[in-house]
Image 1 (spheres, rainbow, N blue to C red):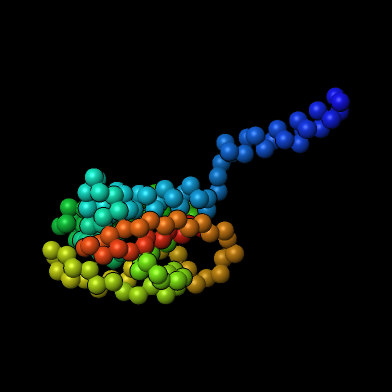
Image 2: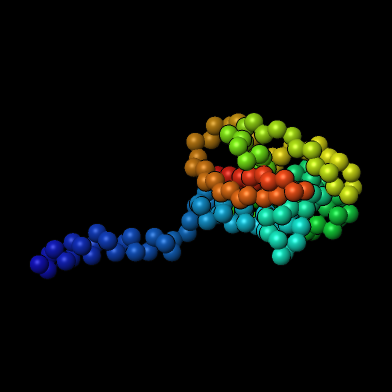
Length: 160
């Protein structure tokens, strides 16, 4: 009985510490944190309405336009690299796309967004890497439903 108990302890005790070990960059917690930060803080029109994105701040983020971000009173880091802003070692991709779009990371269509600063045609994809490069790395994905100007979209975040 003692040997059986000892074998059980040796087999299962190391797994008790797994939740506390350092996670790799491509973990669901990281991609979820980025998705929540983009939809709820970085691009939100109001802190009271996370998921309702400011059209001007969305354009400033997607086009990395710091001048528009300043003019529209967006978050100071709206034009910053998303990986840098969220403190991620790996690569990040943020795509805003139609709800029924399949594989938005490779075939995102341009968005036409009206703001008080004019109408902008933007590519709805902000990435820190070339997504066509086969990396063989783990990718985690998180999504949020968002609204821009009353139209619903899906915000997809990929981290690898």
